[in-house]
Length: 142
Image (cartoon, rainbow, N blue to C red; front, top):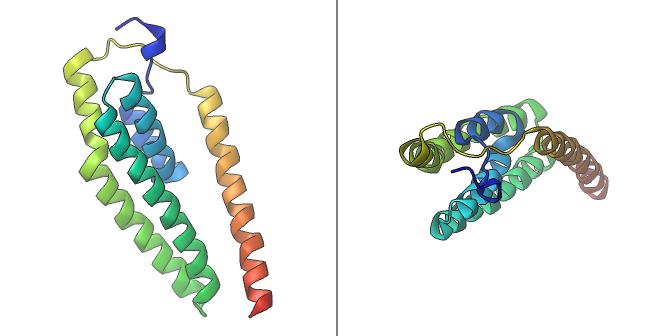
């Protein structure tokens, strides 16, 4: 478990950071973890969750643009976000934590978080900028 090429991010931390950076962040890191762990089928599943998470992020933007009441749109987006997070967490997220704990306990090469969290912050800021610009464009054309 000391091979640095097989280093992974802490699976429990990926879930915790997904509360801040969305399940897209967590599922992408899980996909990379599964690849490092040699579990290509589970990596493919995480990749599908990543794509689904990106689609959900687009749905949030569209809800904000096309729902006439912004408070209703915000509430609906928050509810959908929470529901999606729960479904993702309980259906796939926990399996990686269990797998790693069973195989390595806590003795595995760990990837550092600094650059990864910076990318998460930049991505989140980029998403909000994209959402605002798209919202302005779509509202001005309607």
